[in-house]
Amino acid sequence: MIRFEHVFKRYPNGREALANLTLEIASGAMTFLTGHSGAGKSTLLKLIALVERPTRGQLIVNNQNLNDITRRKIPVYRRQVGMVFQDHKLLVDRTVFDNVALPLVVAGVTGREIGKRVRAALDQVGLLTYEQSRPLELSTGEQQRVGIARAVVSKPLILIADEPTGNLDPDLSLEVMNTFRRFCDVGVTVLIASHDVRLTQQFAVRCIRLEGGKVLA
Amino acid sequence: MMNAFKTWMTRHAQTAIGTLGRLSEQWLPTSFMVLVIGIALALPACLQVVLLNARLAGGEWNHALEISAYLKMGTTKTLAEQLAESIRKRSEIADVRLVTADEGLIEFRKRSGFGDALTALTDNPLPHALIVRPRMAAAEPADLAKLVAELRQISNVDVVQLDTAWIERFNGMIEVLRRATLVIGILLAGGMIVIIGNAIRTDIQAHRDEIEVTKLVGGSDAFVRRTFLYTGIWFGLAGGVLALVVTYTITGLLGAPIRRLALLYGSDYRLTGLGAKNSLVLLGLAVALGWLGSYLAATRHLRTIEPK
Image (tube, rainbow over all chains, first blue to last red; front, side, top):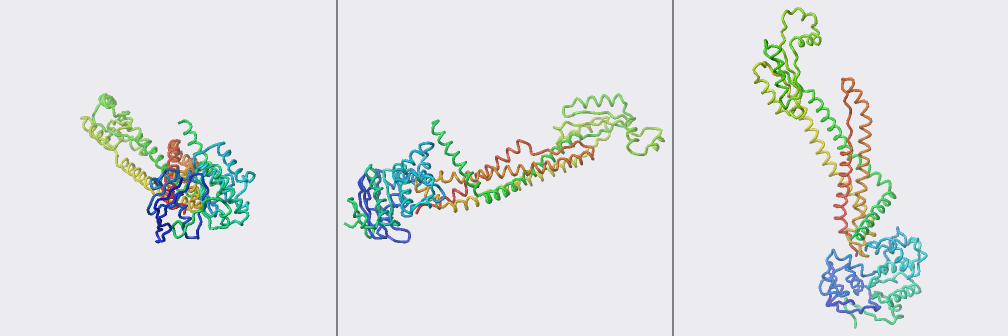
């Protein structure tokens, strides 16, 4: 469960991205976060990932108050949260396998366990045969699915995605969203920020609309 | 517990080998770095060899140190022998040799080149002399001065001769050399830390994306830093090995001519190399400096790279 309680976020340049946001996202559900650019979608996800800190207010993720997590404890916290990015953030000089294995390596998983879990994750996104390819040899849609495999390889409880279909055509977008849907079906809390209303409407899931840093009722 | 240790070892081995792979892929800048470090370390190592040899040579000369005690004219040979015996018993004395007036004259005749002119002398003008050789432990200037003073107190002793000035000068020179080696070593160690730190900083900038992504997927500062620490350690180790190769090569090249030169002076002096212990110290220092340089740089620069 993710709970925002009166969260404010003001950036050093004075821009107020979130203003008194109170919000609850249920566990094991898939939720869309929509709104125009600048509405606060990315900021909201960054707060969950602890890339940014709230200026004021509380944010509770899986019964942990994120204000209590010190800088040193951030890495361990982040291992519970899978992240997918619009630009997928893959390391182009490493193979697909190594990219997907990274979260396991940093968490101290060793030996055969890595291979087993990486292949399981690649299988879930339908890219098992590409493990020795380099990201740039794949299509944009495939690259995004590698990104998803990396996000889920350590079996996080929460999966957040910021405009994961921003660079994809409608068919590929739908395919990527369906991939997310499958993870939600196995109990992962999925939160996807997307400005593509036509795409999100194809799914019968909760849609939170943000505007000016507030939830639009 | 055992398992945790094994995991820890595995992770370190993986990082160490991975880093080595990355460095060998960029072999040109890597070899340049190693060359710079190696030469920087070879200089103090070579100075250390010079210092070692100077000390050893000095020790050899100290060994040859002798005090001449000339007895008063008219002292009998028997008394001279008794005197020699009593001095020999002292703990700080290695050996006492009695050169009687007759022996002294023969030797003088041989060495001085006056030869026949001296046969014209009816009386032997030379006194008996005791050649006193102190133990190594007593070869410190202050101890020697004390010994000389005590020998002077003996009633039959006329004149005691010891040239301590050269020992003091020599020890002074050794001290200057030692300090110079130390200062140069410290300066170059500082330089090495800066060079490695700079290389690590460049390396960190080049891997910005990788660091950011690693942090996003839950990589700790220590995990991210480890790669760079091993880079520094490899630089240090390779530089240290190169410094040893340079030092041993120089020692090897100079060994034969120095030996030949020594033989010309009638000495069987041989150039002493750095030695196993000093070589290990050098390698250890090189690795430690590599680690320190990368640790300082990585800790500082990695903080500035956070996911946005």
